[in-house]
Image 1: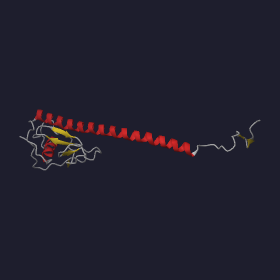
Image 2: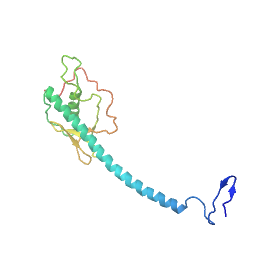
Image 3: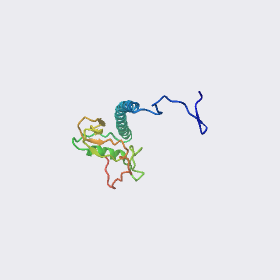
Image 4: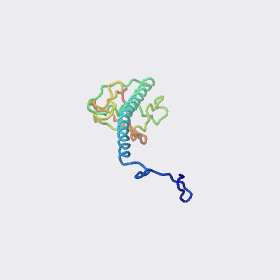
Length: 174
């Protein structure tokens, strides 16, 4: 028996009571499996994101410490005691690394040693990455550790317009 032709389209015979498409139980099973896979993917993504934040924070720490090293090679070593509970020393060190005297004859060789657009804020939030001055270099404070330091912002909002130095700015150290 040949299938009937209706307006030029050939149709096939289906068993009685069956229709084309997915049953409700098939859809529920597929959606459940997709939900389990999505849960596994989200958990893995969270672990990757945490690892990438650690890597970015260590990179920023290394950038600051390399800037300190270059500054020390060209000028003098920045060594002074860290003030606990305050971020004033971190910001003074950072501004010293960002400063370039507008008078070219007095400008330090190689300055600025750090991007002047970097304008971080202080934080003591234990759920955030922070950078703390130890008296000789910057160390990373990871989430879960207590301490006050420069907040690591992973959205890039801590890079804004360049810091404007007052005319009587004094560099740290000396």
